[in-house]
Image: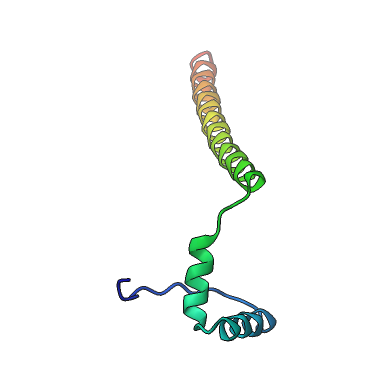
Length: 91
């Protein structure tokens, strides 16, 4: 295995840190190795995958809706400017 040179900071509670350290010691490895192996071995369940796909779609839909609202507001603002010009011209 290549030498580890990158760092990932993970925030945990004191109780979680103690439990992780205890598990690493029990398995005869250091905390870093335990965390690497745990992260590499993690496979999300089908429900988690479905939920993540749903979240991605909601995020995309939200962006599309925001873009459509921005377009509509721009159209209304331009329409208001045209109306104001017409009103000013008729005075």
